[in-house]
Amino acid sequence: MNKKIKAFISSALIGGMLLGAGNLVFAQNTGDASTDSSKAAVVEQAPFKGGFRHGKKGLGMFFREDILSELTEKGIISSEQAEKVKEYVEQKMEQERQQRQQQRRQQIEEALQKLVESGTITSEKKDKILAYLDEKEAQRQQEIEKVKNMTEEERKAYFEEKKSSLQKQGKYSMMQELVDKGILTEEEAKAVMEAIRPPRPVPDASTSNSEET
Image (cartoon, rainbow, N blue to C red; front, side):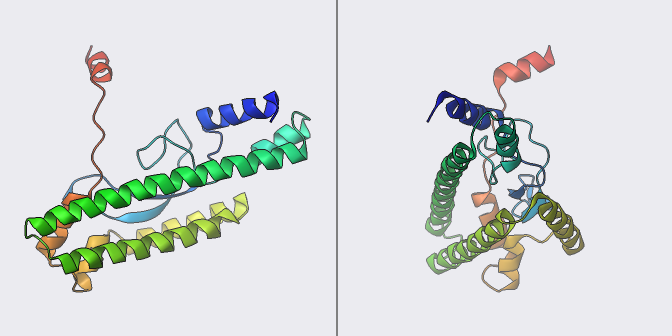
């Protein structure tokens, strides 16, 4: 891999050039319980400003192929080099996604086990919750693959339609769905929601102090 390609990959990974407008993000509201904090939604990705929408800084889900096309047209890299860069970065993106997913799955399983040990839910209900979440994750991956193969125009149109559909549905949390299915009671769902909610990011003390001054 020559210096031009290495330089491009470095700038892409650091500068967020892999994220395009209208990317697919399954965000989880981290507000209080009254705002359905467990609601998983497909939302339109806002313009990239240096961080990932779900709270972790990292790579996007889709590759900005238009950037590679521009570099190829300007003669900075060849078509073959562009394809190699695309394959390399997509592999890295997938590795990071899988790692994040595994970590989150483990956190949820540990949180549910604590609820079992405290007598809040049964072991059987824990297994049903995990099976339900695994099913939702599989559906999410299918949607990601579907959107991956769309053109930028198709993707924008798809997100507009999806956003409209979500607005009509209103606030409907995954935990509420488990209640409706008879898997959890309202109290159990609230306890589970609180337990598996991603932790709020801790504010940087130095940043807070500088803002106050």
